Structures are given as C-alpha cells and as structure tokens.
Image (cartoon, rainbow, N blue to C red; front, side, top):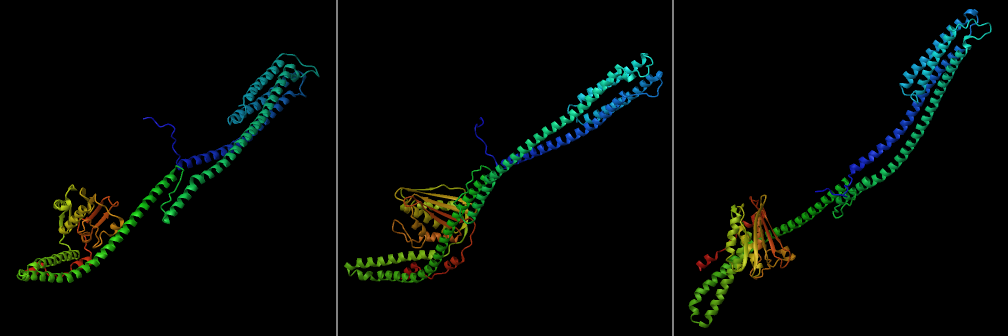
Amino acid sequence: MGKEVGVSRPWQLRHKLIFGLALVVASVALLLGGALLGLSSYFETMDTTQRKLDEMQIVVQLRDQIHKTGEVRVQDAAPTSELQTDKDTIVEEIRKGRIILGVYESTLKNETLRRKLDPDGGRDELALIAKLSEAFAALENAVRLNTEAGVGVTPEGGARLVQRPAVQQALGDLNRLSTDLFLFLVKDVHDSFDSSRANHRRSLYITGGATALSFLLICTLLYYFRVWVFTPIKLLQAGVRRVHRGNFDQPIQLQGQDELQELAVEFNAMTTRLRDIYKDLARQVNERTRQLVRSERMVSVGFLAAGVAHEINNPLASIAFCSEALERRLSEVLHKVPGEADVIAKYLKMIQQEAFRCKQITQKLLDFSRSGGRREPVELCGLIEDVIQVAQHLPGAKGKRLNFQPTEPITALCSGPDVKSVVLNMVVNALDSMDDIGSLTTVLSTDGEIATMTFTDTGCGMTTDVLDNIFEPFYTRNRTGNGTGLGLSISHQIVDQHGGTILAQSAGPGKGSTFVVRLPLRAAETRPDVRDTRTESVDTVPFVANRAAA
C-alpha cells in the first residue's frame, strides 16, 4: 500500500514546546556568538597590537644599529691603519645588527606567528628579514672588498671606509629595508584595527539582529503559550468545575490537536460515561424505590390476607356445609313440588359454586401470605421445559409458538413449586396477551451468581401506567376477564422471597412485553417481616371435611 500524500500530522504539545525552546536557545546562542565575536576580536586586536609594538621596538633598535654602523669614525687611529680599524668596527656593528635581526626573527616566529597574531601571516616580514640578512652580508662583503683592494692610505681629510660607494649603497639598502619593515609593522597594526572594526560591526549586526529576533520570538511565544497552553488549561478547568457542579451536558471544545485536546476528548468521554452512569443509577434508584414500596404494600397485604382468609374461610365453610345439607334434606320434599325442585336445586348448586369460588380466592390469598416450600437444588432448564410442556395443552396455547432452547444445566437453590408457579404465571399471562397467532420466547442464562429467565412475547404490550402498577395486588388488565390480579403479585412475592428481582418491560401497546426474572443461584436470606407474616397459621375448615360432616 502506498503512503498517503498531503496528510500532515498535527504537532503535539511537546513538539511545540521543544520547537519554541530550540528557537530560544538559537537566539541566545546568536546573542552569545555576537558578543563572543566582539570580545574575541577585541582581545585579538589587543594581542596583535602588543606583539607588533614589541616588534617595532626591536626594529627601532635594528634601525639605530644600522645608523650607528653608518656613522663609524676612528679619531685616533694612524693613517696607515684607518681602513683596517674601520673594517673591524663596522664588522662588529654588523654582528650586533645581525643579532638584533635574529632576535626579531625569533620573536616573530616564536611569538607572533605561533599565536597567529600577524594579519598576513608574517609573509612580508619574513621576506624583509631575508633581504635584511642579504643586505648585512652585502655590507660585510663590501667592507671586506674595499679593505682588501689596497686602495692605500687615504690622505688626511680623504674618504673613510664607510664613505665608499659600495659600503654606502649597502648601508642605504639596510636603512631602506629596515624602514620598510617598520612600515610593514605599522601597516599590520592598521590592518589589525581595520579587522577589529569590521568584526566589531559584524558583532553589532549579529547582536542587534539577535536582540530583535529574541524580542519578536518572546512576543510570539507568549502569544502561542496563551493559545496552546493557557487557554486550553482554562477551558479544562472550567469543564472540571461544571462536572463538579453536576453539569454533564456541556463538553469541552479544544481545537489544538495536541495532548490537551486528547485530554479534553478523554474527559468528555469520561463525562459522558458519568452522565450515563448517573442516569442509570437514578433509574435503578427509582426502580428499587418502586420495588421497595411494592414489597411493603405486599407485606401489608400479607397481614390483611391472613386476617381476611381467617375471617372469611369459616363463614364460607358454613355456607357450603349448609347448602349441601339443605340439598340432601330437601331432596325428598322437592319430589312433591316438581315445579320448584329444579329452581331450588339450581340455587343451592349456585350457592355451593360461589362458595367454592370464594374459597379459591381465599386460598390464593393464603398462598400470597404463606411461606414457600423447602429450599433445595432445582435444575431450572428442566423446570422451564416441564412448564412449557404443560402450557402447550392449555386452551390459550392453540396456534401459538412457545420457543425455548435448553442450555447447559443451571441449578439454583430455591423452592421448586414456587418457582414453577412463577414460570407458569409468566407463560399463561403471555399466552393471554397474544391474539390467535403469536410467539413466546424464553431464554435462560447466567450472569455470575444470578440466573436470568427472560420471557418475551408478541402480545398486546403495556402502557406506562400498566407497567407502574402491574405487580400491585388485584390489579389486572387480563383480556379474558377471568383474572383476579393476584398472579403477578404472588410471583413478585415469591421472587422477592428468594432474594431475586422481576422486571416488566414494554415498548408500548401492540409491541409485545418482556418479563425478566433474576434468581440467585445460592440461597438468599428471607426477609424477616415477610417470613413472619407468611408463617402465621390460619385456622380454616377444609371444605372436604365439611362435606363429609354434612
């Protein structure tokens, strides 16, 4: 795959800071370089001038020695020895001049050139030193030749040796070369000052430019520091304060495309998660509150059911007992009144049926207030299969599909009959809520130590009001008209007794319903108030016994 062209990677904050730091270091280095250039030029000029002054002193001594050589006079010498005396004196002066020239050469090479303090590298000076050495040799040779020529003794007042043309010419060359050497040293001093002034101007340019650049750079960095760092941090701080006040709906907007912008994105994601968690917690609190209120109501209904069942069951038993006794005793009398026999028998039968119907209602109330069976390991998958097999033969299951895919065995410590009644209630309610064609899907799963049974039907659905009151005792919206409104209340009570939860969900009328039953796999502690209420024994007279006594 080819590389993408034209896509620039955004600068990270650390890259921006490193770039700014590099610019600052470069400007400081430029300033320091300009200052060092000026200082080095100053010290170099000072050293060069000092060396050249030292060399000038030696050259001045050399010139003096050359002049001294040209002014040799012998006042007391005899005429026959004047030339020889002049020769010895001049040779001695030449030797002294060569010594001074050697000192200058040594100073030039060992001090000036070694420290590279000569502007032209000593080229002119070395050339003049060589010429001066040649001129000293020429002078010495001229003196020797004029002495050995045997010109004779010069008469009184005649030309002396230093006044001979050859000697005068050699002395003139020496004077001229020494003067040239002195002038070259002066020129080197001037060149050194010119170079120093040029370096000084260059240092001023560099320092001035670096100062202006540093000022501009500082202003630019201050601006970008506000844009890159100060403003984003201020926005982050404001966002944190909003979250602290509980405002999760205003995200932090940063456009830097750097670490702070990534931090803002992560902070916004965290804020969104916190908002969702808060909403979910609020929903759970509301749901738990409704469940708590519902459970407390059911506790009260349990007390009431025990008392009502105790007070109603005995009169109902008496009514049933009396109606059966009358039916048996009036059988002979009714034969004598054929027209009234059927009516009386019908009414007595109706009394018995309604009494038994009341008995079923009170029995449900007793089931609502009585504690469940003994807790034992129950395999939930087989329990659901058994309930579905029974429900398939119910009249309301005709033409409807009951879907359940068994999973791996899931065992819970619970009351098998109670849980089976809960599952049967869920299935029957789902069948009653569907039309002639529909389906009920049952799913069994586990989540840690919790078993979850989900019942999803395609029935008539529920409104919000129905969802809020669906588990209330005697509240029913059964379309068949046969419900008492106690089925879901009893199921809720059983599930709550086992330490589980039961939830009802629906997208609205005509969109089906979902009931979620969650039971702990291990035994849950029974609520003391409900247990005490349910374990109260209700003295009732069994109808079968009443019938036998009759």
